[in-house]
Length: 340
Image (cartoon, rainbow, N blue to C red; front, side, top):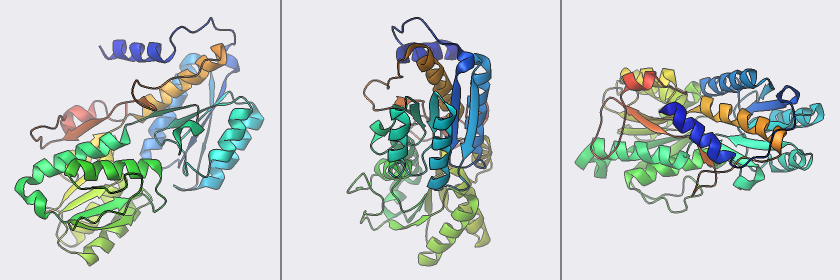
């Protein structure tokens, strides 16, 4: 059934294509991730390389030195254009700052596909293959509200974001969580403008475990009564848990997150994370490689999921504490498909 669905998705993306003219062996594809240490991006690279090998194409990978390293991503794009890449798959560190160099790449005939993090605006790239990040946040917000029940009205919420730059994926997950929890987000295009008294505050993590620990420590100093923690990703969630454990609060605070990596699913099973929204980065990268190879053959660019501005690669809630009204899978089930 999964194979059939996948074939259907590809068919929808490339309906009515003309016959192939170019050889896949001629196709060079660039993969540029935010870092090469985050397991999410490691899995993305695995997916791209596996699909490229299957199609006879070649992937050349680059990454920022840290999450937010725009200069390294600019240099990578320029290097790939000079090398004759037919397509570039990128998780943009700064979706606005990268727009000029992406335009130059597209003007040179390179297909540019955003993975996971949309550009701002989305049409800076030719296409986007991503999780519906707002939905991912909304699902964990709905779960947390149902989990707290009547106590949700008195929640003390810590928001552990990526940065202060209002990066698209950061905003979508944060605002989705708040919406799912029933909090007025004011301007849904930015973080930190809410005035709900249940929000203790926001802090930044750079998506790392150390950043999550530091941010959690800061917000606990601000309000030791925090009982619900939203985190941008699972490494940040792991750091937040360590900070809570250090003050003996690990058992009475709920942590929710987004990623669905195998380590994160393990942390759901261990009770570190109450619920997480699983993404599928291997699928994102694999579909991206297929799209570039098809573009090299036919000149046809990939499309979007009907009703959306991007191709939705899916999201699934993982928790061992299911609640009414929110569909979910267990950690045991999640282990069989983490980041597939």
